[in-house]
Image 1 (cartoon, rainbow, N blue to C red):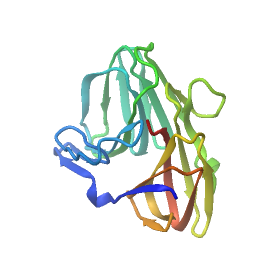
Image 2 (image 1 turned 60 degrees about the vertical axis):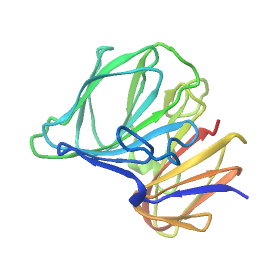
Image 3 (image 1 turned 90 degrees about the vertical axis):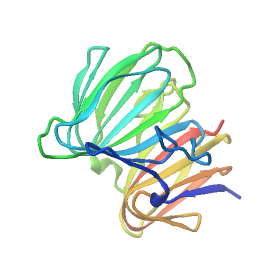
Image 4 (image 1 turned 120 degrees about the vertical axis):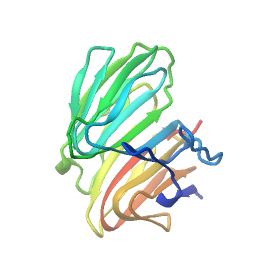
Length: 238
């Protein structure tokens, strides 16, 4: 039988700094829950709302795979590798911090908030050369099917590449539709995060911003009880 853990949206960590309204799926900054440190190689899943004219100043990262998914608004990125990009809804950005990189992220709109999902995945290789990539993923390519956003750097799967045996998928399931995903290995698990809507997994109902981890299984089945926008993180569990 599959091993599951349910993380309701209401159980996430929350910090409102005025300019930043943040919800943490896993222990982060001043919020600590010993039962929610990580899920396998998935270390951070922050659901951030950044006020107009505000953002994160220049700060360092190293030895982490950082994936940014914009849900609403426009985020400006600048880093020590020389990249100056804007990220908009439908786009995904990956940054392999490796030996070390500095970056900043700002919402330059004076009055529109940015809603961004910030994800960190532990790398399988340390001290790699830092790298950056960004791509647009069309909504129509994920209607009632999984669209690969991120995949391992050493295979030919679609998606932006990271230094880990991990995948990130997104799907927009219409009400009443379902899909199945076969995990890539026995040591893998899936962390399912519902952006919008309502789904059922292993008899558990998940609504907006609820999440569920599933491991010790070959397949996961997701059924939409309402039209839903869903992320799946497939990661090594050890």
